[in-house]
Amino acid sequence: MTQQGKNAIDMVLAESLIELSAKKPIDKITIKEITDKAGVIRPTFYNHFQDKYELIEWIIKNELLEPIKPLLNAGMIFEAIVLMLNNISANSVFYKKALKLEGAVTFNQIAMKCVCEMFMNIISEKSTGKKSKYRWLTPEVISTYYAQSLCFITEGWIAQGMDDIEPKEMAEAYMYLITRSMDDILSEL
Image 1: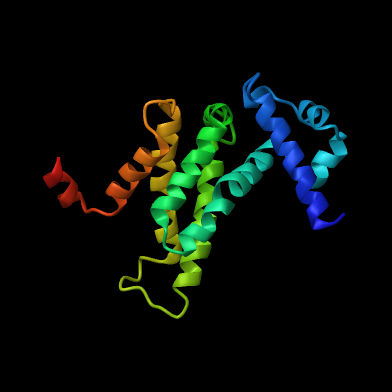
Image 2: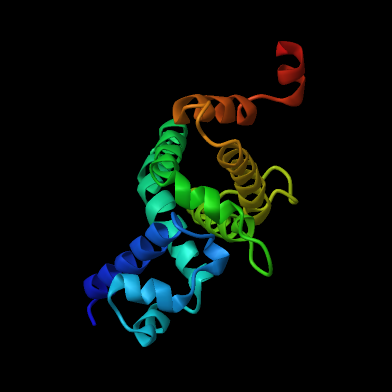
């Protein structure tokens, strides 16, 4: 199967899970329901994903993070965050349900892994040949720090329903936090 064909099946499976999440909690959605809705057989699902949590990871990477990479690489962090939040808002029902995942795998764990990997790749690329002022501030530490802050803000926004705060305003709040010191924020309160 070509990469394009694989991506098409991945997309159909993702759309199937997103649509099913409007009707029931993601924890309760079975692989059979996903494949039936997608019009494929179960072995096809397992040729692409180990489980529905890996499918959620694919959705996060492909629908939220891939579109913002060019903006991040161009230094357009605010625009990237707005785009990501707009994409979450467009599938708000799915993300609200995903946030409620409980058990061995949570949405936070999946999102953190994806965001951390993305930041790690960007930081490693941009820091090639450079040495940090502080040995402790490795690309891993920096990417984890920013992934945690972005996931925390985003998950809080999703949990509050996303209705009262527009993506642009939420991105402005995030940028405010990450561009100021604690002293600055305390003096501006």
